Image (cartoon, rainbow, N blue to C red; front, top):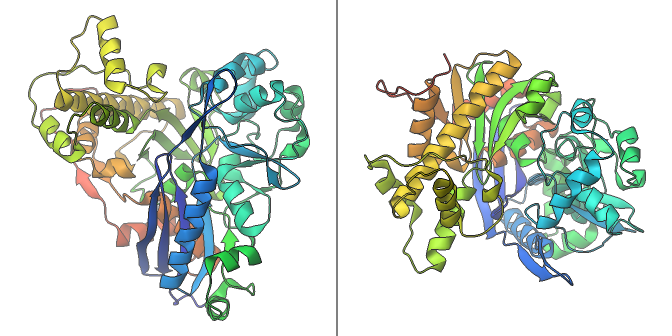
Amino acid sequence: MSASATGAVAAVDLGATSGRVMIGRVGPDTLDLTEAVRFPNTPVTLWEGDRPGLHWDIAELYRNVVDGLGNALRAEPGIVSVGVDAWAVDYGLLRGGVLQGIPYHYRDERAAAGTPLVHERVPAGELYRQNGLQYLPFNSLYQLAVDNAAGRLDGVDTMLLIPDLIAYWLSGERVAERTNASTTGLLGVDGTWNAPLIDALELPRGLFRPVVDSGTVIGPLLPSVRGELRIPSGVADVAERAGSGIPGGPVVTAVGSHDTASAVVAVPLRSENAAYISCGTWGLVGLELDRPVLSEAAREANFTNEGGVDGRVRFLHNVMGLWLLSECIRSWRAAGIDADLVDLLERAGSLTTPVPVFDANDQRFLAPGDMPSRIASWCAERGVAAPDGPAEYVRSIVESLAEAFATAVRTASALSGRPVDTVHIVGGGARNRLLCQLVADRCGVPVLAGPVEATAIGNVLVQARAHGLVHGDLEALRALVLATHPPIEYLPAASATLSRLQ
């Protein structure tokens, strides 16, 4: 494709609470996104003999994806590619290409039993040296250990992470995209499946599909998918002329299929000493490095080394994120309390009374449920007065997230030996002006907020580069983001007396 041409791709971006299909129009000086469809991602609870099991409604998600792609293709017949990103660690199990059961949600309580099953075979320190992954009780290897012990892997021949599963249903090809595969705990720091570790955990080697890099063309849409999309007969010719290179219209292209990997592609890093916070349901806080940090200090700080696009390393720590706010809103509304987040944030921002700053990483906040009561319980255990009313709860949550984010930035800097002079916030948290300002105050360095749609933008850019719409390394892609989506700057308050990075 000509370097001066502008073309279109479609990004399927699945988050823990909602999904969307976005049309990306991209060229050397163009980066425009249009939403084709947005839909909720609502987990389902199913009774499983002796307990409730929390699952992803994967069939409903796929139906919405297909409907969204149909909308996208009708609006933009020249779409040359489709890329899928989603959250990490969760997977579908297949036998003969057929899904066996509904994928579990990482917040399902069954995963907790996996830690002893794994660590009795491979101690935590040795595990970190092999995979560089932070300990989270729901990491894929712990879930797989539980499934193996329960016999759920019997007769299964394939494990596909959620974005790879959607890509399989679209293309018929079963692969493992590298950035998301790195979150399983079963990929070595060299980026390949760790066969000795897989054997030590007595997992079937055949479960794990070939690893591919982001930017790899997986294959064309299946004829059955094309029929379901009701693609007009002329679309194939349009897409082929636009540069897909494969007859039959749009192809499925691997992107940074872990949503954070895609988001980091779109962080318009101002310098190599910039940290990032990809803030949505989770807050992923860290640095982009050329090589992993596998020290004992990094393990004790629970920092992870996940794969990034173009072989970069995402050295980061998971913080609970905006999940705390969304669960509070859900609890208040269920109790009949009028709870509008925009209004609550405005009221929270004007508060002058002190509020408690709690540990946002406390595991009690992981599962769905009555979040305000859990925060109150955390305060009661420490003899601290709990927030009084929704506005104080919101202020307490935002203060606590800002403190957790700032602590993670400081720790990433110390562990990597890289000073931090700027913090970028992308994702939904970039809209939260109170959060952005408090992070700047607590870090003592400027915060650059945006783009909000970082994950979809990163997804689109990797596809666009794979199909010749743009060229260059990550820095070139980020320069296009900066030129077309300039961030908002928040300077630390002159009166801030909190811990600073410098």
